[in-house]
Amino acid sequence: MNKILPIEKRNAVLTTMAALLEPERENLKAINQQDLANYNGEDLAMEKRLLVDDAKVDGMILSMQQLASQEDPVGQVRFTFTHENGMKISNKTAAFGTILIIYESRPDVTVEAGGIAFKSGNKILLKGGKESLLSNQKIVSLWHQALESNGVATEWVEYLNYDRAQTQAFLEKPTQKVDLIVPRGGEKLIEFTKKFATCPVIVSGRGNNFVYVNQSADLKKAMDIIINGKTTNIGVCNALDKVVIDTKVPNWESFAKELVTELQKFNVEVLGDSAFAKATQVPEIENEAIWYEEFLNYKIVIGVVNSDEEAIAKINKYCGGHSASIITEVADDAQVFMENVDAASVYHNASTRFTDGGQFGLGGELAISTDKLHQRGPIGLQHLVTNKWYVYGDGQIR
Image (cartoon, rainbow, N blue to C red; front, side, top):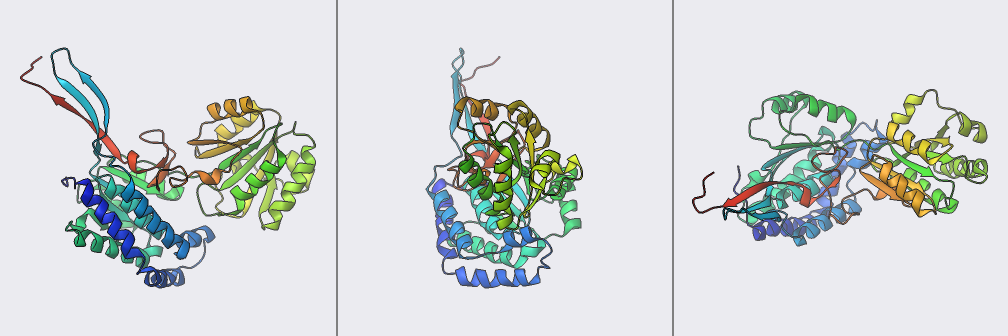
């Protein structure tokens, strides 16, 4: 296990990394263009995640600066107790040790995940996708520069340039101790990791997020929230895929038609259940299994329900456990919905697009967990720790 670096040293590395990214901005964008040129373009969402533009570089720099300014998540006292025999007992946060993150196409993760893991006292193994190899290698070279210039070993941030077979071999028989694995990507990647991993895995799961338009909804808010959730960025796990509307919404059919018109302005393919399709003339879904799907595309499924209970049951059956939002002006209805929907993030009158470590005040995230152990939702700096017990005695025996 690596000896934990003092917090001053960890912060200095992050500050250096932020400073290195600015002069390398144009260089990094040019290298990323090579990755984009090599990519076959078969997956629009993947291509969007692969791109490094000025906004992405700004985000990388900001995440390093924010992380450097946050307090040390390691050594935080969570519980204290004095035993009747005089022993002093405390429980404190502790680094995991080594964390492996497996991810696809997002060079910004190489910065953000590396930073979050390093700040929380962990060594990080980065296993990026082949489509972003050149961008990732460039970013890791900057990490190594930031570490070396602060007198820290480069092994704290390591890139695993493995193909699928090598990754499987490493998962089954790691060549170094790995304490936690976080797969961040599609369902195939998650299944693959869980199947072969020999240490704990936190699943950064799929989205398939829902908006429910309750009978007392402000329909202007509903419209804006649905359009925002579906159209601003289709390639992310907090994007919107499903909408359910209460048939008790006044003139729900006219709202439905207006919603379809607005979505179609953004070239969104709209499918409906039988009642919605009949009311709006959109194509009807071929089978119910589509309610389980995450689209990561300009596609949405809309249906109707007859009560809040029916909406909650439908969402709990089909959603990915990520995010769900209720649009209503009745606070009690919102509270019942939020308490009973089984998702990592539940919203009242807001877009699911906010499920994000930076937006939730965590200064970025390693991933968004749809598991219930060890952390749910955005995994920030303060969640990348485990804990241990410190017991101070003076010869006590039991």
